[in-house]
Image (cartoon, rainbow, N blue to C red; front, side):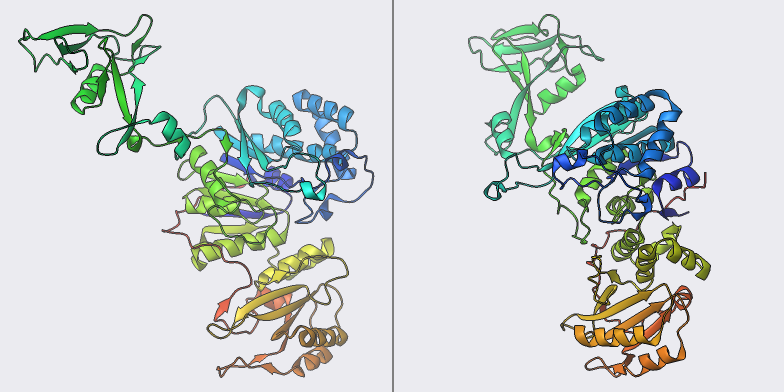
Length: 568
C-alpha cells in the first residue's frame, strides 16, 4: 500500500481525503515572513487579491476576501476557537497577522480532527507569531494538552549592529508541542554530555580512567522492594573500610569487625531493590560514608546521555541534510528527532505544508508511512526529485501523487486556473528546475536543466520555454535566439497546443547538438507537447549525469513498506 503526496490547498485536501483520527504525528511549518519588519505585520491591509495567488516562496499572508471569509466561518461555529478569533480581531484588526491566524485556524481544526487519540502535533513557527499560535492551539487542543514550547537555535549569531540594528539578534524558532489526549506516544531521546557538564557532575575518576559521580541511593517515594535494612560491616577502628555484609557470605561474624544495619533517613526509602543493591556491591559500584550510608557510583560511559530538554542548540540548519535550494528548508536532523521521539515504525506522519519534503524523506528513511500536502507544483516536483535521489527510481512505487494533471483536459484546466502552476508542473515532467520568478525578468527562459556529457567536463545546460496559450513560429524563433545568447546546448519549447508546420520548420533549422567524443546527435531545438509528455516522451539529450537539482543523500537500507491512507 502506498503513501500519498497531494497537490492542492491543504484545507481542501484534509476535508476531502483524510479520515478522522487516522494520523499518528503531525509536523507543520506554515509559511510566514519572519524577515519582514515586525511592525509591518500589524499594518492595516485592504484588497481583494485571491488566496490562490500566494506563491511558493512569498512566505506571507495578506488580509483579503479569503481571510475575511475564513474568519467569519470560524466565528459562526462558536465555541472557544470563535472566542479566540474575535479577541484576535479586536486587537489585530485587518493586519497580516490577523490574516495568518484566520487562515491557520480552520487548518488547525482539521489537523486536530485527523489526529489519533494517542497522536501529537509539532507546530513550527517563529517568535513573531508563536504567542498568538499558542493561544489558538490552546483553544483547539485544550490548554491541558500543551506539552512543551521547544526553542530551536537555528543559527549562531546575526551581527547586524554595524548596519544599524538596534535589537537583539533573532537566532531561534519555536516548536509548539501538543497532544490530542492524556496519553501519547513518546520515545525518550538523549543528547551527549558536554565537557562542562562532565567536569561538574562526573568529577571522580578510577585508576583506569573511567569517570563517575556519586548518586544518592535513597528516594522520596516507595516503589517495590525499597523498605529493607542494608547491613554493612567495617574493620574496628577504620571508618573508611566499609563493605556490604551479605548473609550468605558472612554467616559467622568475626570479632575484629563492627556490624551495622543501615536504613534510609527518616521519610525516605531506598531508590533500588535489595537485589539491585547487592548487584551494585558485587560490581564494586557502592561507596559507603562513615555512617554506613551507601552511595552508588554512576559511570558516564554507562549512561545514555542527557534526556532531551526544551532548548535544542545542537542542530544547525545544515545538520544531516543537503541544501536543496529551498528557502524555508529545515534540516533532516531536526525531523529525525521529532519523528523518532513521537512515533513508532509503521505510524503515519502528516506534513500539510511539506515544501521540499524534509519530513516526508525522513519518515521514509525511518520506516514510517507518510502524507505530504503542498499547494505548489514546484514543491511537489522537489519532493519527487528528492525521494528519487535518496531511494532510487523504485521509490515511486511506494507513493502516489493526488491532484496532478493526468490527461490533456486536466492540463488545460490547470493552465486556465493558474499559468504559473501549469508552468511549474510542465517543467516537472521533464525534471527541469524553474528559474526564480521575477516579473518581466525571465528573458525568454522559464526553466533550466543541467547535465554532463563527458566525465569530468563542465556542466551543460538545456533551457525551456513553456507556453499554455496560442503558439506560433515567432516564439520558436525567439527561443533560437535565447539558445545562442545563453550558449545553451539544447532548447526545448513546451506547448499545450500542437505545433504548426512553420514552428516545426523553424526548430529543424536550428540543427543538432553533438556531444564531444560521442557519436550521438540531438536536435538543438525540440518542440514537445503536453500530450506527448503525458504519454512518456521526453527531451532527447545525453544521459551521463543530471545535475539540475542538488541531489539528496542516498538512503541506507531498504525503505520500509508503506501504508496507503484511505479516502475519507
